[in-house]
Image (tube, rainbow, N blue to C red):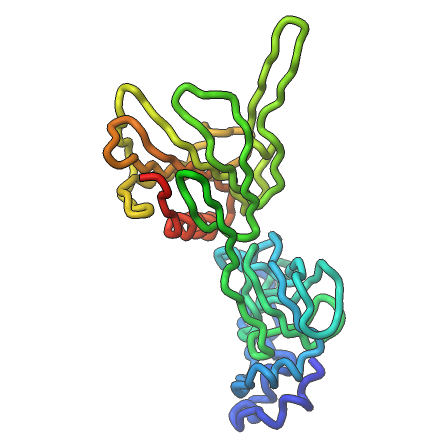
Amino acid sequence: MGLRSKLAPVCLVAALAAGGCAGAAPRSAPARSGTLIQGTAASCAGLTRPQQFAAAKVVFDAVMLPGAPAPGTNGVLASPAHARVERYLKGTGPALATVQTAITTLPGGAERVSEDGIRPRADEHWRIYASSTTQPYATSICLGSRRLPARTAHFASAEISFDYPATWHARTYTMPPAPFSSWIVWLSPQPMHPPCITRHGTHNTSITCTDPISHLQRDSILAYWTTNANPAGFHRGPGSPITVGGRHGTWRVQTDTTQAPNLGESELITVTVPTPDSRDSWHQLTALLRGPDLAGLTAQVRTMLHTVNWRRR
């Protein structure tokens, strides 16, 4: 990777015996069709951040974009992975970049795995230390690349506040009055449009409302918070117990598509939280998820719920 001369002085003796440190290209056995070959890269010494920065040719922060996941990895992006660059800390480059990851799919369906390669997933923030100036950028954990803490944005209304992934959009829309429900906010990483269209006719006015996106992309989500009331009283439905902002509610997962069949969702999560000292009102989070990384999307929903604060008691 062009870093052998810079990293050799700090390679461990064991690493030298094995053929270099991870700054050099990892060695691996030839891949065979239909098999998974584990690369055998030598270990490298624990370089300091300044040493890693000095050795790298390009350093940048980026958000990993959805792409082809490597089979059996729970969403790890196969090489080359696409990223949206937020800023360059060293060197310059394009706003959309590609980087090497730990897993490369070879002709015939075989895969080559680099043990020191990065294992990013869509929507994660990464600081990339690259040993090359051409794409896909060559990088590894030993070179210094690492996942950054998830960035969040904050939403607050008169009733509720919470943090959500900064890669999502939060939108509020004016909706026609509904008998027992009102919408607080819509959330999605996809761009959204107003859900309602008003048509003024000669003798009447019609309002048609749909979801604010037309179709869920792979590994995407559409979620919305509502307030609800039922004069007949609140009846707790099926689901697992969950605590949201100190209130006891239920968490329910469904795998049918009856909620919004045109969106193409794989899973529906409904979180119902009764209002304290009320027999007929509750808040509800509805989340429509499309995989394949349902586990990752579910984790984002749970993380959001952990930050909920109720602003009206």
